[in-house]
Length: 94
Image (cartoon, rainbow, N blue to C red; front, side, top):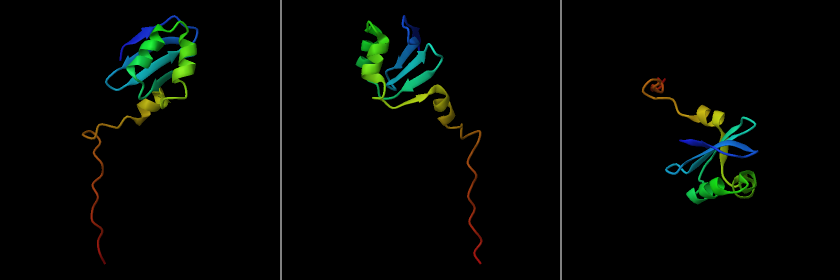
């Protein structure tokens, strides 16, 4: 995802993936958040808003599921070809 640096007291950069409908924001405080199921027009309005922070608070914050970048990275499944699941073996009857 390409991130664009923005002029904002709240944000450092903002990016959007239209295929996944994911909005990524990097806050000036250093936090990086991903927002899921965000329509493209919301991203477009955010980028053109005079006050990106105000628009974000009114339209995005607490309205779309979100997680930190660290949480998203931790949730990424491992490559199953490198780490196949253990095979289950039948229990001996007896």
